[in-house]
Length: 559
Image (cartoon, rainbow, N blue to C red; front, side):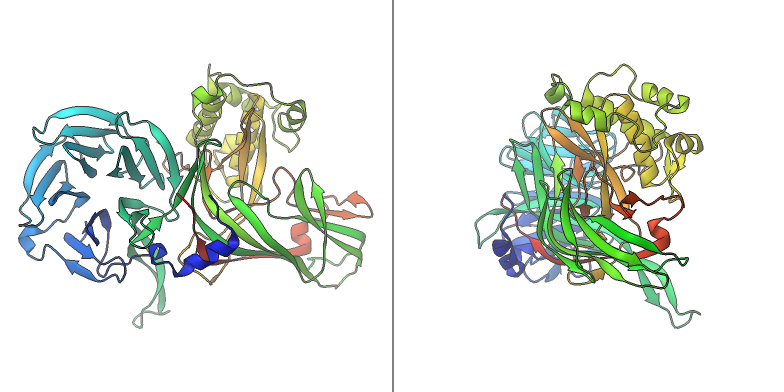
């Protein structure tokens, strides 16, 4: 369960929360524990590494170049036998005697990951879209299980569970070992997970799930031979970090790695033109309390505010008797938040028999109340095409998402246009994706609303560093009667032209999403009791916003 603040603070000294950074690691692709040592394959160098998880001390096990494992990926060890995948084949060797590779089986496509449970061998294969299950002694295929994600998957076994990491889904799945049925899935705190292994923590006697990551990161290189001397470069980034999780079967969601973060939102009053406003009420939404987000503290910055509740959401209200030409102010809020990644798991079968949508939600979230162009021919036709003959709510919203992804490409745009214009031009920002999704969802009888407003820069290893997002961000929630509001990202999963599209943020949010003002306007302005005309005076023309995040520490969670 989500811990209290007092209990979570003590975890910063817990060695089971440390990031393991092996020396000479370029692209860790498979990991496994052998007693107290961690084994890992580096696909770039071909090294089989033995790592001390408490000190990062690293040893190359296959020091002879004849045992080079360049291009190998999956790794498992059972009863002294090492198993690995390389190209289309699976090999084994006697780890305690020598590292001579013995061929086990060759697949028609590249083999990605391998796991061993007694006499059974499990092999993941992205190209085939399945998990091959083989008999160890005869190398005979027993069956195939469905692979849940769209990316390269690695695999390990714990008791009667199969655990898979998916690089493109940024997820780890827990499957029933016998049937392959998904029990739940969790989001990883970093991108591109490339291997996973369980190990019993000697201090707590609990199983800790370690996940390897491999990607590239940009950095500024100081090149004295260039002019200017600073240049953008990319370098390999590979490490191992514990993945902590908790599954709530009653509410059908799983939480994973959480963080204590400080967020501030401040407006700097700096009008582009001199003007005078009287009896001003400046409203800014405050962070929400949700299944994955706890608000520990909120305080004013610059000027005091009063707090109001609007449609169940907290709002900071700043009041000015008069704003005169040339006047300057700083005002806003700072919040201390505990945030976790969350992934809900509902299936179409769970929503076959739904109660009627409550009337108050129909009047608010099935209508065009935000310039959604729901009466235009192009949007009405798209709403019909998107779902075809589908009647199941979950399949309908999933079909709408994929339909929009097929027809839009992501670009940052200077202005948010209406869904009909966005649909015609075929490109859009996150807000424009959202408008199209809202329109198509509402026309198909699915209550949808806007959620946002910012994402913390996704660098959970940069503790205590001031981080500033480049843009604001919005996504959506859709309502399932009997279950409530579920999140869905607007554009973030549209990662590959034509698909397949990840489902990591379909009914899921990562730790860096900060939920502010659910279903209400994030920021609004009144003067003399009436809303200020946005076409004449916009908030952007009045003030400059300053948004900052600081990740203070990682939080624990009970499995």
